[in-house]
Image 1 (cartoon, one colour):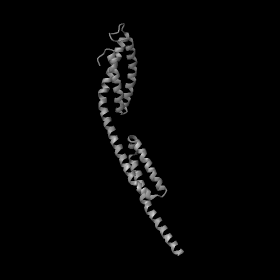
Image 2 (image 1 turned 180 degrees about the vertical axis):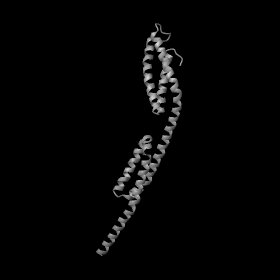
Image 3 (image 1 turned 45 degrees about the vertical axis):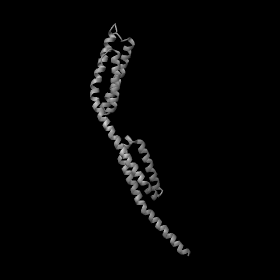
Image 4 (image 1 turned 30 degrees about the vertical axis):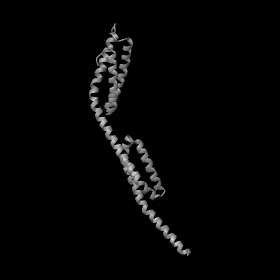
Length: 198
């Protein structure tokens, strides 16, 4: 009796080992496929969906831990959720990348007029400040404080415009337009304070 139960146990153990071996290859292939899919979108995801990427990485690491422990059943059970998470991450990163490209194109179009208008405004203010600085009588509505504020504003505008131009040169039109518009707004205020038409 003991002999036959030993053989039954040995047979069951062999079946279990073979069963595990049969599950091992598909589990390894599934994890490798998931890693490959994630590698293909990692750059875009890092830039456009970093938090979501972090969550998917954690999910993948959990599945890899299960694989390392030989829990092939657990790996296979976790794969559908992981694959869905990778697919969602790809969709999010792609959508955000397209939004960023569209915003960049729009900003590029807006940069043209700004790059023409703002330097003219800054030059006009610079010329007006020079004239008023040499004048003995300031025009009505313009005080010494107004003139001093215009002078310091002129320096900060030139610096900010330089940053905007550098951003445009490097192809970052979104930043260029944001900085350029701020300079234009500041220039308009200074022109008003000096009694100039903007």
